[in-house]
Structure formats: C-alpha cells, structure tokens
Image (cartoon, rainbow, N blue to C red; front, side, top):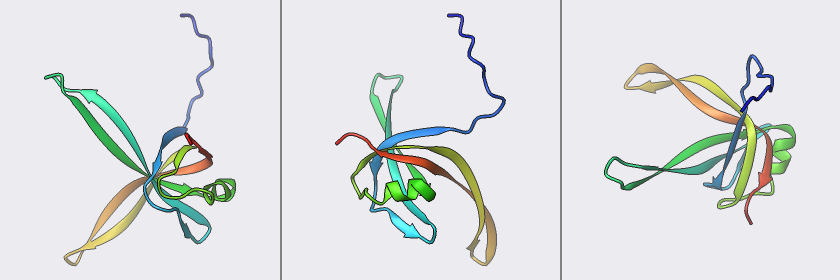
Length: 113
C-alpha cells in the first residue's frame, strides 16, 4: 500500500469508548468522570485474559455541556487529548511527587444505547 498521507510532526489525540463508572461530578469549571474500557489478550497457554482500564475524563467548555446528560453506566465516546498532571502527596510526613494522567475531552457523545 502506497499511502501518501502527510504525518504531522506532533499529535496528541485520544479516542476512548466505554462505560462511565460513577455519575459525572461537577468541580468548578469542569465535569469529571471515570471511564472503563476493556481489552482482551490470549496468554501463552491459550487462556483469554481480560483487562479493565480506568480513565479520568475532564470536560470543559462544550464537552462539559455534553457530559451533563450522562450518568453512571452510560456508554460514551470521548475525543480528547492525553494530559499529565503532577502534585505532591504526603505519606508518613514525607512529600512524595505523584504524576497522574487524564484525558481532557474535546467532545463527549453517546455510544451504544
């Protein structure tokens, strides 16, 4: 296949499709929720291995307005970008740096009904 598409120098684009784990929560200018996605793989012995991954979704602007209609158990499609965030967590008097990843949604749509 001779594909002549131009590849951008940088791209941070994510699409996740799954089920909302708990009711979306308003936090200031954002609405946040957790989204579960599943994947399957086959082990060396032939057994099917299932894995659930949880994603933190942060919605602002138009995506915030879209997210208002959903609740726990809703099947949604999220388009956005992957963003890391750092903070310090105190453990036994020590401040430990923590990095977490979240998806900043540009668009949130209904998936399967």
